Each structure stands twice: as structure tokens, then as C-alpha cells.
Image (cartoon, rainbow, N blue to C red; front, top):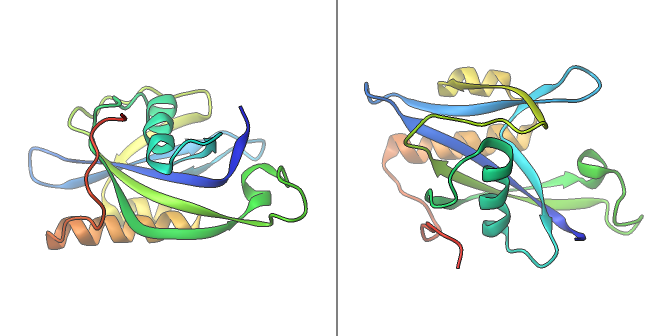
Amino acid sequence: MSRAPFQVLVFPYMIDSNGEILYCVFRRQNEDGGYWQAIAGGVEGAEAPLDAAIREGFEEAGIPEDCEYVQMDSCAAIPAADVCGLLWGNDILVIPEYAFAVRVVDAQIALSREHTDFRWVDYNTAKQMLKWDSNRTALWELDFRLRAGLGFPAPTHARRS
């Protein structure tokens, strides 16, 4: 299946028994030893961003597909070369990255081969660990919305149709 020229970013979060909000960050495996990020992945074929987020959450972290995913306002323009080289040729140099949040009730995570580790951490720790600016922006939005009780701009989606 061909890869569409955009990316999704998924931030799993949970609220523990003390009411503390925790975010799951993942150590991406690469030749330099890796770096910390949210779940990130490509969109396959004509897949909608929401469907890609749900699929990536399941593939990379074992998050059940019936968890509630919400699209956030955060949308970054990222260099295509940082994602998968110049897969789409010299005409597509920058692609959009759409951010999603997913509340995980059971903190059980099943890592894919793309990651070597994961951690549930508070906002400040996650912010310091994350490599990419787009991840820090999406994390800030998610944390602000949760703490301020603002809700989310897009409808909540629980399951693909």
C-alpha cells in the first residue's frame, strides 16, 4: 500500500488514581540510539487521519482500537526528509502532521519493534524528554485542554466505521 504525504501524531494519556495526568512517551529505535516522541506514523493509501491514528496506536503500542481518539488543533508542517526521505519526489518537501489524543484507561502498553522503551510521565518530564517541536506543541495543547477542562475541538471518535 502506498504512503500518503502526511503524518499522524498520537499522544496516549491517562489520569491515575490520584488524579494526576500522565502522558506516554516512546523511545524510537534508530542508528543513533534513539529519541523520545509520541506515537508517530504515516497514512496508508486513502486512509483518513483518524483511521491512521487508530491503526498506529494499535500497531505501535497495542492501544485497543475502541479507545476514544480526538483530533487536536495542533497541526505541524514537518520536513518530508525527517519522515521517510524524499519518498514523494522533489515536489513534496514538507508534509502536514495531524495530532490526536487518546485516553488510555488501562496503562498496559505493548511495544512494537519501532520502539525500545516507553514511560508514563508527567507533563514537565515529557516536555523535557521529547525531541521534536511538533510533539512538544501537541503535548502543551493536550495538557492545557485537560487541566482547563476545555474539551476538544473535534468530535470524539470511538471506533472506525
